[in-house]
Length: 101
Image 1 (tube, rainbow, N blue to C red):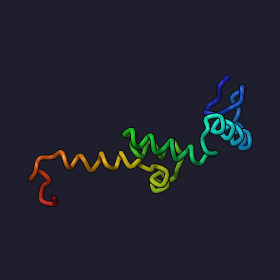
Image 2 (tube, one colour):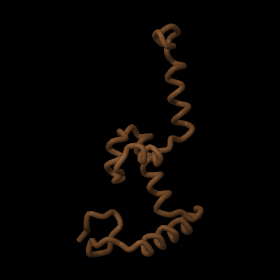
Image 3 (cartoon, rainbow, N blue to C red):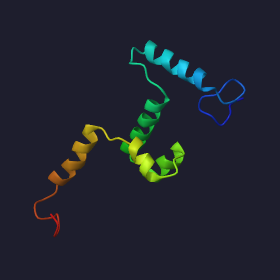
Image 4 (cartoon, one colour):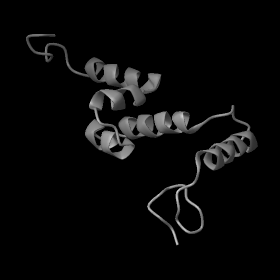
């Protein structure tokens, strides 16, 4: 039986911190990655959601943050996403930016 948790035991119960930490460390070692922890996974989760176009409010609720400011600390954009955002302006015809452009 699976519980409401992503990482749970066979009975659906919450896993203790050490159990999760050790599993992540083993998985990162097997994948030949640097050692990572929960915090890195939360940042990655938030960043990929935001880069995929998920609204910050939804990401905030998924992470369980009380404030949108905390969520914004987690939701880092990749350099490519930032470059693509600026390219949107480069693709517009001249003179279409309005009074502030």
